[in-house]
Image (tube, rainbow, N blue to C red):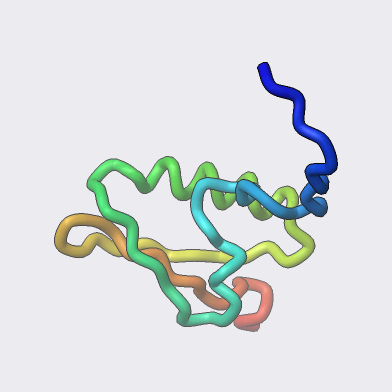
Length: 82
């Protein structure tokens, strides 16, 4: 093991995102992202639940199958539809 000196410590919040999928990038209703693969719906919903528990701004999503993967859209919050 080699000891290093004077290496600055990265600020908090840098590094790995809090969840596997970057829901924080879905800033507006209608924004979407594509994920390659067939069996990822369960993983996406689990990650969303984790994101919403930790977030000050929870979001709602919908998922649709596309060729070679799925697309995830941010949708309007149910409470705002009334």
